View 1 (cartoon, rainbow, N blue to C red):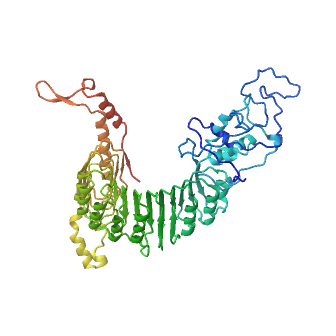
View 2 (view 1 turned 135 degrees about the vertical axis):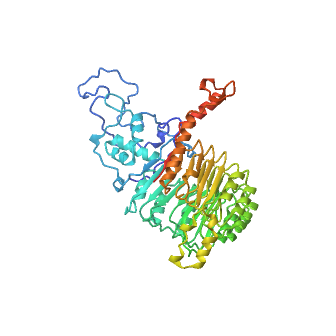
View 3 (view 1 turned 90 degrees about the horizontal axis):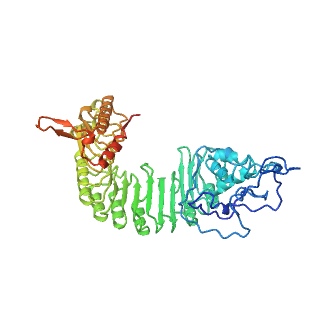
Length: 588
């Protein structure tokens, strides 16, 4: 099958799924097709037969009509197709989770005597019903349905051509033309998601570029066994040729070596597993979000300072920046602050052990309207948290400080008290039990290490008290140095306590009526039972929460029945709605 000469397929209208099928009609064949030998109204043979049933208005008299022609009238002179709209239609995304190599070539030649087009009448299925049935089939079922008869095959082909989003899993040891054969069936694709279990090379990029001329969003994810052999020059040519491409996300970019990206339409760029890049040039004036995830190897020679400097000069509209690298330093932060990105709202600098409190000062002086700040893996201390609270009290809603060993429970408590808009906070592996990190003197014989351990014993067994009215997600995973936890967060819905091994069951108090899930993997059984008991008690208390009132003589307090309560009905409905969601304690 070749689809390169097919006309452009416009998206469907919101009013119905069959309103735009007129643009999907294939050209009429010159050869006259043979019709059915049976009557279309009663089903009896046509030879010597006079039908006693009245004609149906919806029945067509032309036996060579396609399934689409029976529901939509098509004129000989078609108007030009309307311009492409934004991706805001109701068509489904074809999911290819169970596709295999046998789905490569679904086209089967059928004899003309088996041709049975859809028509209204006895024993026939209307075209609209058949379309709705086939469009809900998985890809393997759609391929099988296309081999039933000519009418089903034409409808299946129209379904393929109508798809604008495709999720495709490429199995291991697949042929080079597998992706191209599938993409040729969908010439109107605008969104492509590939999950690759085989190696990636320039051939696949060429298939995508040839088969998807209107591609707007592309995402490529690779498995652990797959190798991405795309080079920087090939990536640059692909981005430059795709004039409609707005979002590009690709994993396994370890073989790029260096790249130059030039695009006026690209707004989102995610590249992961980068390693030893000789050059990185971004000429994308409309780029608003960038994520660069480098490998964790120490021999990475990428010059992040030059990269950040060029990024600030060539991409002035950046709003979200994420960089994860062990080579992040205070100098790279200074280069980023010198770029003066006025629209920056989300900043994530992860795994930079050389990022200190001085870096926090530079960030706070240049970007005072941040809504998300992620400095996980840095060396900031409680003083840096104090500066964050002083600068971002009216904007910051998400703060991530995982893997920061210099932060204590006092700094976390101060952040929750001084940031009223905070909704998400991640403090994983910040309050750690140092006894599990350092070996004993008998095993190592290192006197200096033993002295360091004794000097930091005051960090073990800390308590954490948080009272916040808007906090929804709190992560304390790996905080093995925490032995007491008191939470009073009415909006908290998710709590992560994985590997909090030293948390005492009798020193845990959860006053969180909206809590939906508590992660407690790696905790001892007594702590898990205490959490389950408190969660169930909170749930039971929310079911029967009536006001108390003293008797006339003031002797004692009694519970007022619900029909005598003076509380508004809205508060009662809200209370019942909250009580209907019990909390789940998740343990692996």
